[in-house]
Image 1 (cartoon, one colour):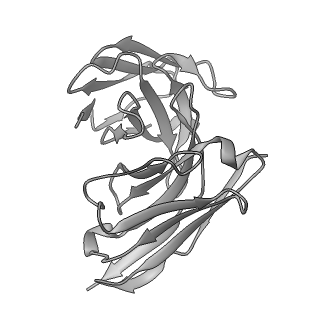
Image 2 (tube, one colour):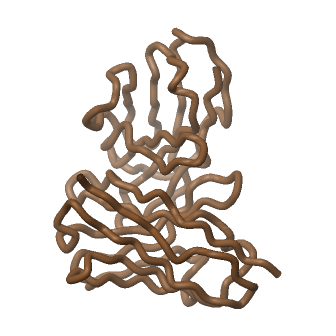
Length: 107
Length: 119
């Protein structure tokens, strides 16, 4: 099974800061990497699919990059509403999937 | 508007069973593979099971294989997860999620249904 490791597990940043979250896979997953945002008590919401494609309606301050085993989610200017937990998700082994353990972002 | 609404969760004793449902609307349900994903209290997301659009293929996480059964009724736009032989570690919020075939992303999720297993 492919393991997904996110870092850091949590972070605290200020409004306007540039925030970077890293996701590493235990083997190459090409570009089959998605990112989700989850707020407390809510379902996850997709932000980025296939490494770098912004989901419709998602603010452009979110971006994704990477390939193979190393991927990054970047928030270019952190906003108060971005307080949430972020998960990476590999879909290379579809229809079996793996999520990262999550990164909690606080202001 | 795409909607996924789960139901059927509850409090059950260890070894018990539940039938979780996910009612879909606002899209061609029969044209999409579907998934169940769960989240234990204070923990991350765990993929549980997937089913192809025509029920030809069904897959399970090792942690639930042999105890959970996924099915769907495309005529009723409903996804089902039959959960048997429940254990304390199955306590979680269970979400249904639609997957887009071309991008392999879970683009719509339900609000979740809580399953609590007591000893």
